[in-house]
Image (cartoon, rainbow, N blue to C red):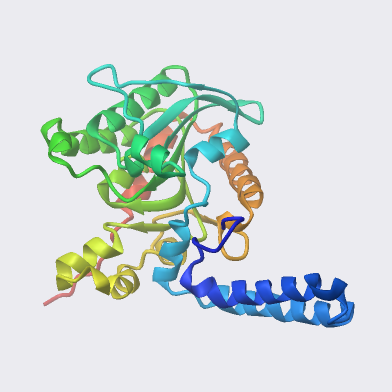
Length: 324
């Protein structure tokens, strides 16, 4: 949230923020003489109950709004707060350097990683620079180049996912967007080094899955994972983007939904109300997840690693047949 106002207040948080404002006013007015300290504590207890109730009854669309919050941590924030000695690498050695993809070598608690992620930016200028986190084909080729480099030097790969989808413009199609995504899927499936994926925000369409084929996949509590954004789904099915709330419910895109489908392996806890309320808490949770996954993956022989990865993705999309 902003310090000077409430321009970024989410709809489900308005009552909470009004309550917080009232408590501040009581504390400031008349040197605290309007209410006793006991009265203030009672109000603060009621505020805490209000928060727990509001955040425990979130709809799928409200969860989507949380993961799009303008101050929610992005890939660069995680790199700065989890990694040390980060050295960024650029370009796909074919066309250009895509600023929507950030990647490079880093240390995490003494372990060398190849860290790659989709970056949206945090203000108007940086969002334009990062193309709102929507990669072009050269972005996916850049990510694949870095993953192959990791395989060559036997380094684990960490992939942060945060995109509403691959860039859908004509220029991207002309340079082979679909081919770049398909190639990443194939090559990540057979990369002979551990891959840990962390979904930190939006994970939508092929733009997300192109960097999300991993041995272990963690997802933040208020992130979402879907074949399409709710607005895109509503526009296609009902010709009305305003039905986004209905689409969000139907898509089963929350962390709990995709965990039940065994698409991800673990939900990473967020602070009450979302990662933007306490980023430091989330950094610790993500780092703990990475350390746990590295401990379970580091001693696996390459052939076992690939077989387990293959089996993991073959299990997706369960279905039953009848004898009719």
